[in-house]
Amino acid sequence: MKQTLKRLKAEKLKFQRVSVSAFQLLTTRLADAEETLRAIRTGEVDTVMVAGKEGSQVFTLEGAEHAYRVLIESMNEGALTLTADKVILYANQCFARMVKCPLEQVMGSSFRRFLSAEDRATLRPLLKRAAKSGSKIQVLLHVGDGSKMPAQISIRPLAMNGFNRATIGLVVTDMTEARRNEEQLRALTHRVVQVQEAERGRVALELHDNITQLLCAILVRSQTLANKLSTRDGPAKREAMKLREMLGQTAEEVERISRNLRPSVLDELGLVPALRATCTEFANRTGVSLKLACKPLTARLPAEGELALYRILQNALENVEKHARARHVTVCLRQRAFVQLVIKDDGIGFDPDHHAARRKGKGGLGLLSMRERATYVGGDFKIKSVRGAGTEIEVLIPLPPSATAAN
Ligand SMILES: Nc1ncnc2c1ncn2[C@@H]1O[C@H](COP(=O)(O)OP(=O)(O)O)[C@@H](O)[C@H]1O
Ligand SMILES: [Mg+2]
Image (cartoon, helix red, strand yellow):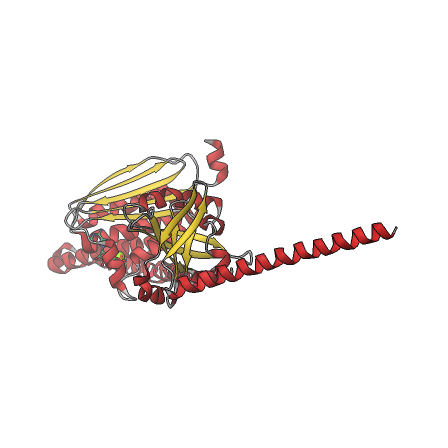
């Protein structure tokens, strides 16, 4: 019995010794790691060893770049360097704060852990390509607390130096604020489009109910007057006839404007005839030749989609008339997995990027509202324009699921 107790005590002592030494070992390693991180950040160390599949690799950090590192630490953007295997060699404090993860856990880990499977797949070829040139990508960073943060990653190849393998530099920008602003701008543009539509409806109604009615009454009276004047009144009768004719034209013009302002024209005519009428009216009025290739659709788009196409065509033709100095326009409507509308002119063209950058709250709403109308119904809006070579607008509007299933 005494013997057994003695043995147990000895084993307990041995165990305590082992755990104490393991604990001491871990503490020492942790202190070492912290000291290394501090030294890297302050620029005292210029070489890091990373254990990988192919054994340890040495990466130099070049002590002479201390000033750059201090600069990077003070940036408001995340800055990282990665190995070709996406192991994080270096990250600044800002990145650690972004991903809500202690810096010591960030460095040495894989950058992949901060990305979704989808973003990883998108990033892979970009990182490969980035070995030659730079590129940018929008991702959702997986943050330590389980949330996701919209970010833009700029990828830059870093020069190979000494015995290093190629390393890649990333600058990560938090896009939360930018996204919020974009959403607010989109909501605002949508509101503007809605208000514009309501206002058009109101004006159309007033024109139709008041002005057109009045014009019709005057038209009838001028006809009566012309009838009452006998041929002996020669010039007066001719004048009355001319007046009647001009009033007829005015009534037609007011009716045309009112019809164009009214979305109900789509219900009255249907999408294709409404687009056709818009094109014919444009060609007759402006004298610009317009070729229309409009295939009837087998399925009907939801009302908002039809209105988007109708208004985009009107807006695009208005721009052709106002700005393009075009001689020929082609309008093409086709149905594929979605409805595609293409409006192309051979006018003077312009630089859409330059225009967007320059507008700063000034300028028309045409292009902005066209894009908004298309995106609001889940569609896409593209504009291609080259100075001197014309403009092409392409709009894609998705068909409702029931229509695509039937195809
Ligand atoms: N088809 C086109 N041909 C040439 N320039 C165009 C065309 N469409 C648009 N633009 C240019 O883009 C600008 C913005 O158009 P838009 O947003 O519709 O505003 P607005 O027509 O009121 O100026 C125009 O001022 C013009 O410079
Ligand atoms: Mg315009």
